[in-house]
Image (tube, rainbow, N blue to C red; front, side, top):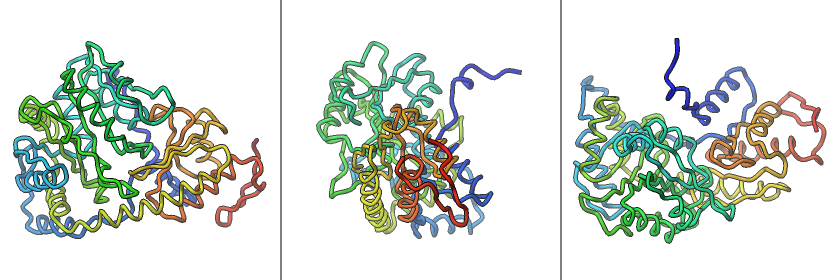
Length: 405
């Protein structure tokens, strides 16, 4: 028996694998601290729960349109008008099983075999594999100056005859960096000039700090008609802490939206209807939960960055948003896989290797957990790496002894 070449070429999602590893260790009673997660710990908004429960109580949970129920599309249209100042038609909206699925449907709809898709480094771990699944070729672009934001020229220089699309994720997972207005404007202009698709992954654009406002890509577009090749992706997962509901959406021109809906109809028949009603409740309900989450995350960020900055040899770029930092630990160990495994083995701290995001020597460290987890997690990491740390460490009643160099 054999599996396809495509299946062999796709790697497992490292973030989901780490979640599974952390769960298995916790089930065994291990004192795990998960600093690799991408899941806010706050509860889903009550309006979402009420809406979902109301449908379930009827017992009438039936098939729905593949591209989303009308009520959810209406809520997405209102959201787009409020936050992007852009009025779109229902035919331009496709609701999917999370932002990941929305991006996947868009890639299926626009890519021909061997088409290239450009995205900046560091990148979300799934971009390369998703592009390959759609038959394309991923082209990650790293800034020559070593920062987390390439220049528009560096992106433009990578555009060739096979380039079909660019993906921009701001604020960025894993770095938390928010790309500048000038950069986003330049990428929009570049895509229009070169007739490229632009996928704006705005998953985290409501979770930004220091009084910043989200970047509105539509502001820089000169073509907003039916020939527009701009696709904007959002979801309820992060801003409403509703990761398990798996509802995201894409807004594009009518032709690409129809193509995405057709593909989705054959692939999944559309998102779960109770989850869609939960999304309607979240989008139409009281929005205070987003501000509350953002304030909590900003405070957590400040605490984490303070602890990391006190860590000799670690280089930290302060995140502008999301709930991730992407510090450079290469002064201690350049192989991020080995480093992450060392921390998990020795002190049961889960992090995500930077290699999976396109940058060796880094670890993605999340601050969406508790302050206790953040401070204790960094203390454990420091104990493993700092040669001047005490020889012993207690994890609860368990005494650990440094038996490595």
